[in-house]
Image (cartoon, rainbow, N blue to C red; front, side):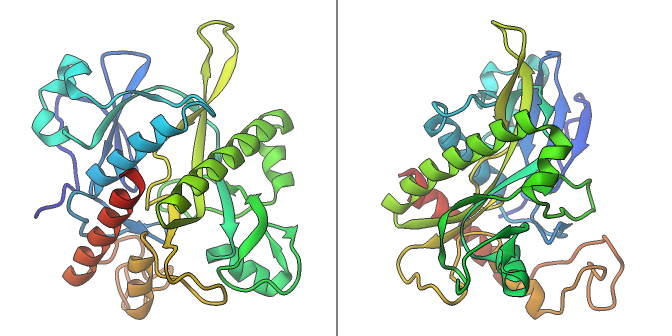
Length: 309
């Protein structure tokens, strides 16, 4: 199987190229085209080879969650049916089928809206040192992978391409976007996480943490800015999923997400600043072993199958 690393849509205007998604303008001034490639990143570094059909799996799962959670907050999805998209998009159907969404153009809120239900990742690293997570004091004695007393909203900055996101306190996040908007974002993120985590548990999956992104659009009725959910949602790229079977607090967990790739990178000597290898050329990316490519694809496919069926 081959991977779609770079899109080739010469009659469309590329607006931005992210770690996974290529975003194009369309003939509609109110809409954008989101294309999920098969690129994969870890530690904010785009790796050189992709995961076959990863973009299709991400899109499938995002569509599932957009539909399931639409009663909590509106989202930016217009359609995933290419036959319903502008004419200039339909001509690339063979390349775009299954990995594309036409979405509403929105003003993106400059925060990564992270919700954590379990002690893991950078939260665990901080807690071991200071007893806090994003500066929020937590009870003493918590262990790795333990379920938190209640889900935490823990924002981070939204870094530019090639830069690293920075964990920040709720107070700093509120100062960046304003208290009123911060309250709306944090409340929506917590509601989305809680309902998604409850659904995942019924499928034998723990949603340990996840990242949401939000945007603002003008309401067609009031003309005021309305908060909506944007980007992808609750995919293995933006979430930490663990199998419920075998879960045990006090240690790291098996996962359905990018941790498989991260663990391999660390075992191979990865560290930030040497992103192309041990000898290092910064920001050039690593090449993943084929066994890791295949294993990662299996993890993603398993997550999609469990959560959507």
